[in-house]
Image 1 (tube, rainbow, N blue to C red):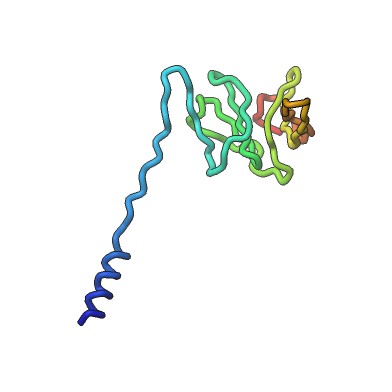
Image 2: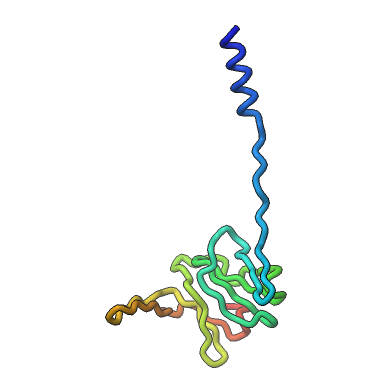
Amino acid sequence: MKKLFYVCLAVLAFSCKKNEPEFVLLTYEDWYVFQSPTDRPIQGVWGDIDKTLLISTGIAVYRSVDRGTTWQAVIPHSSNGIFGITKQKDTLFAMTGLNNRGFGSTYRQALANPSQYSVDDGQTW
C-alpha cells in the first residue's frame, strides 16, 4: 500500500506543468531596445534607427528598416564569423576578424578582415 501511495505521489509530482515566465523586452524613455531575431547575442550594430539597421550575431547579419521590429537575414550564414559592420564612403563591409592589442594598461580590440561588401545599404552582399 505504501508503494502504491509513493508511486501515485511521484506521478502527480512529475505531471505538474511548470509555467515558464514570458520574456518581456525592457523599455526606456530615451532608448530603443531591440533583440536579435535568433537566440544569439548581438555582436555588432551599424546604421540609423530611422533608416536602416544592421546587426551581426557572429554567424549572420540581419537588416531592419522599421526600427528593429522585423529583421531580414541578408547574410544568413558565415563560416568565418562576423563581428561587426563598418562603412567606408558608400560601401559597407562585414568584418570577420578582431585585432587584439595592448598598450600598457590599456587593452583594445579593432575590427579587421573585410570578407563581404554591400553598396546598397546592406540589401545585397
